[in-house]
Amino acid sequence: MSAKVYGLSVSPWTERALWALDHHGVSYRYREYVPMVEAPLLKWWGRALARDKATVPLYTDGAVVLGDSLDIMVQADEAGDGAPLESRAAGQWAQRVEPVLCAVRARVAHRMLADQEALTEAARMAVPDALAPLCKPLTATAARYLAKKYGFDAAKEPDDVAVLRPFLDEVRQQLGTGPYLGDSFAAADIIAATVLHGLSPHKGRYQTMGPATRRLWARPELAQEYGDLMAWRDGLYARHRKT
Ligand SMILES: N[C@@H](CCC(=O)N[C@@H](CS)C(=O)NCC(=O)O)C(=O)O
Image 1: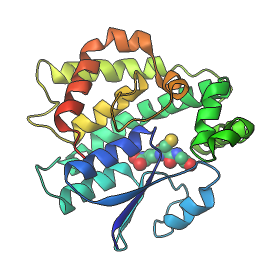
Image 2: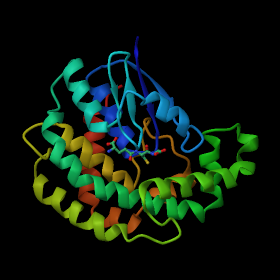
Image 3: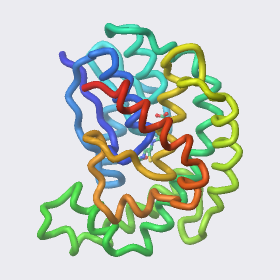
């Protein structure tokens, strides 16, 4: 059985897993997951995982089912070709980054509830364009569903900047003047670079989000202040994001 990945294309967790798989030339079929609506399916896909909370990205190839982005990166390191990404060694870094991504997710969900255009764009992922405006209430319910699942209050504006800033300072310090966080391109770079979608989503063929969705993810003031990191992220994509 060829591998399948279920994911959310706007999600940094999905993007980091796909990047590692693509880096190693692992072939897979990608299937976009529709939050809430497909929750029973997600549970079913992940039935081999003894977890109460199934999430995407989720990878399955018949032999293994992996429900965590870092596990998928490790699998890519083990199964694919090309320079190793040392994903197993990035476990602590992934844990460090998790609350940062969670804070960004809370901000995106909060903003989405107030943005009619973004609600329509999200609906377009699941239904034909003509029906999307009618499905805005469903997307709003999905945003509230995610808030409940991940334990945040979607009605409240979260202070994700307070969580982002120390992380950005840390990346800046660790990078110094070098092109990578460590000695060579590795999982740690992918993990950090994909968090930067929460300042300004990368504009490339891998990110097809519409303009309203892009607004939800953007923090222009931070993207400007950390312009050096944004340039680093864009350079990393240009050099290392293969199909
Ligand atoms: N630690 C997990 C976190 C993944 C995660 O939080 N995924 C979210 C992205 S928003 C998700 O699955 N959302 C859809 C849902 O829960 O239905 C990983 O690294 O894969």
